[in-house]
Image (cartoon, rainbow, N blue to C red):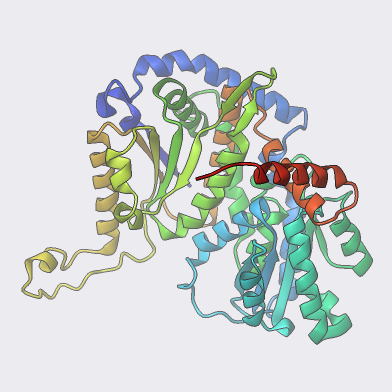
Length: 465
């Protein structure tokens, strides 16, 4: 397994003094990086944060593999009901290992499709149900709290849909992922005797891709979750090294921190040049935004921290976003994600057409064109003073994907330490959830309904043109 990190285009020698870093910046930041590593390691050793341990959860991995084997060949659809961290990881894994929808190979009981119901738009949910056969569908509800409104509402609909056809046999069409000791979803699973897999309490949703949250759907759709975790385990060892040259996660975190703090690069564009990594870009977007976007630091000082993540796809978004990136506000840093070895190069026919704009491509390959497009975009951005770096995976397989997830999670944790914030809470998300509970009549949230009523009354007094 090898994942390379090239930060040369972040340096002032390439991107210019105004926008790039220099060696002195990195030397001066070495102390901050060392403290970030020590700070996060101390929190991990206290048991506060558990994602570094997930790759070595042998009992959970074995239980998931055993269950997946027991139901293999029974279902042609795995329907995940979840949102945010309870859905994005499963999608990222499936896109990476089996390809983007709808270009995956034909679905069957030997190759079940993955349907993820991660929004409560009724046209989406009800439309999805029409495409599935309840007799051949396994439903996987995922919610750490067991009370996420979107997940619960969709689960109630899907349960009724299954029971209307299968009756009591519907209970054989569920496998649940939730917390071990709390939540209504856990109680429901116990009451109905659903197979249940647990998410550790010290692992938040956005850091849960290598827990049962991501591993169960992956195993059910044919991924080798042992290799996924072995790659992550190997990366974990590297992420604890104090040497910046060997610890890619720590070095990348320091570079992005310095660019945000000293060069006002408040936006990071995750730019995979691989459709297989497109789902991972959306997974990363949540990880980076929800972890680092914080109002206060650990001292209670208002800091409004956070680098805004944006997902762009190469080469597609060269034709939709790069104009802004090249000539718009210079407030961004670009993280390219490249793949060295493609499973199929996509050979372009050698036969000439007689047209110059076509014939220069004859005999080459899509893989070579994709790589040339990425390197050309890197060069053009750099020439325009836009700092960028590149992560390169040798290939997209279970081992490299698990390692890449772990690298990104460690980078995020280290970045939080450098900002002196809690990268593992999400108070900004909770208020919106509480307003929703109040509006929908959940017991104990009447005060939030009253606050929302006051908000609506205030809106009515606002004068516009």
